[in-house]
Length: 90
Image 1: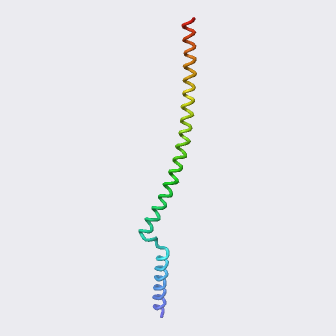
Image 2: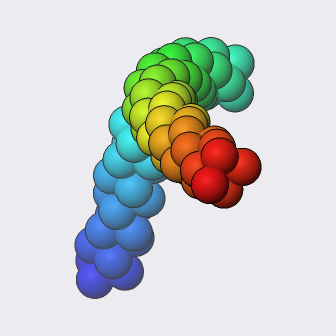
Image 3: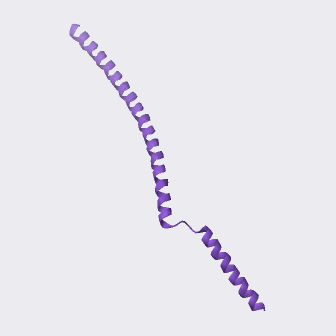
């Protein structure tokens, strides 16, 4: 009788364990690959949008730096031209 109870407990535990394993088992390989592919596509879109935003920010900063440099060089060229004119006239 004691052995029967132990055997039933082992069989019952095995059935519960097998049931839990089936309930929590991962999806089939095809389903998992499909889910991963969808997730990858979503993340790729998000990353692409972030990269575009950062590219736009960097382009604006680059243009501003280029404009500042061009203005500085123009001012320096005007100052140098005025000095040369004064030296030649002077």
